Structure formats: structure tokens, C-alpha cells
Image (cartoon, helix red, strand yellow):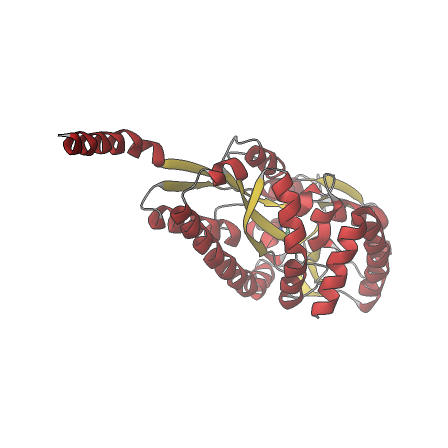
Length: 324
Ligand code: PCA
């Protein structure tokens, strides 16, 4: 009799508690649905949904439709959404260490970018943990190059241009080259260039291609300044409530997404530069003069970043250099 009661209770409990375990996770993304990060995040979401048998169902919201890029990190921190993707270097004001992946000319290839990330990861994870965030995976953008609406052969040619920026590094670069920085989300740049709110930027071939910037801009110069990353983070309270089995599923999906995202970024590099050229832009390396001037500016910016990021920044750079 006792046994039957226990069994009946267990059955009743399962029936009552089962719906509580099925969670819907909305995942804001700042970039357009067709961007490779967004495609990769959607596949990650499907991996989690399938792997947890629907216990956790992830729905991605691209193009800043749920939260704009600048607001995604805070939304995840405060639990407005459980998970999201963000370009962490956009938050250097909170902690200069977040800008490690945008230090000019520190890591200029996918290989070096990977080593720099491994060197910085423990520190970044710690800073994020203190902000109630758990890092799941990070994927680099292709190398950053300069976009203009005219031919530019030296820094002097950049004077007075309105330069679309996406983080402190890019705003600083504008100031140091005599341009006027204006912060604009990637989702809004096509319109900004079309209406003359901006007439230049530094970004990957991928972002210019996604936003069809050839409709307004004419030149893309390969500079390979740095490879900033997008980070997928989950709210740590939410993460703490996930079962061990589902944590393992999510971590495995995250590892797969990190690898497939990197592969897509590498493949997208040439593909999108070809796409810019097909759109009618002049695509090619920056002149030696321009590169030399940018490197000199980069040295000043690196010194400033190291000062702002203190011992943590120096430790990241030292450990990266030791891994080279
Ligand atoms: N695209 C993003 C960040 C770096 C990149 O290549 C952007 O322009 O917003």
C-alpha cells in the first residue's frame, strides 16, 4: 500500500514538474540573419533544442530586433533574456580588458587571433563571472579593413571624414586619423552610408558584404588591423538552474559552434571580399604609406590600452607572445 502511494506520488510529481523543465530561451543577436555569426548561432540553438529533447528551446532574434547590440550584454546580465551574443570589445568602458581582441596589429591572422583568445580566456571568463555571465563560446570576425567613399592612400586623405565606429578602439582610431567618429550598429550602417551620416568605417569584408555597402562606398583596403570576437553568454543564475546533463549538451553544442563559426569566418573572408568587388568596389591592400602610418598610430593605441588594462592586459599580451 505504502509502495503504491509512493509510486502514485512520484508519477504525480513528474506530471506536475515536467512543464517547469521545458524552458524557452530567447537569444538576441545584433547582426542580420544572413550574417555567418547569426547562422551559426541559429544552428547552435537547434543543437541545444534537439540535444535537450526540447527541455531548453532556443530561439534566435537577429538584427537587433529584440535588443540592440549595445544592450544585449546588460539584458543577459539582468536576466531580461537568458542568453545572447555580443561583441565584447563594445564594453571597454566597463573594463578595458574587454578590448584585448581589438588592440591594433597585435593579432592579425586567424591563427594568432586564436592564440590571443586562449591567452585571454581565463581572465575574460573571470570578469564575466563577476558580472553574472557564463561564457559559452566566441567566434572571430574576419580581419578588419578600411572602407571609404573615395580613394585613400595616406592618413591625410582621411581628414574630416565621418567614420562609423563600433567600439572604443574604432572611435580612437578615427580621432587619431583626423576623422569624426559616429557610433552606429551594424544593422543600421546601410542607411547611415546612404544618407551621409557616415562615409567610412573599419570592419570585416563580411559586414560590408552583409550590408551591401557598395551601394554607397567605393573602396575597401585590406589592413588586417585585428579580429574582434562575438561572445555567446548565458546568465549565470539561469545556468546554475540547468541540469548537469543539459549543461553538458549545451557545452558540447557550444564547442561545435566555436569550431564551425571559426571555419565559416575563415571561408567568408575571401568570399565576401570577392562579393564587395562584384558589387563594384575597388578591393585591395592598403598602400605601404597608409599601413606604415596606421602601424605608428596602432603603437600609441596599444600603449594606451595597456595602461588602461593594467596588469591583466599585460599578462594577456605576455602569455600571447609566449605562445607565438
Ligand atoms: N563587423 C562588426 C564588428 C566587426 C566586424 O567585422 C561590425 O562592423 O559591427
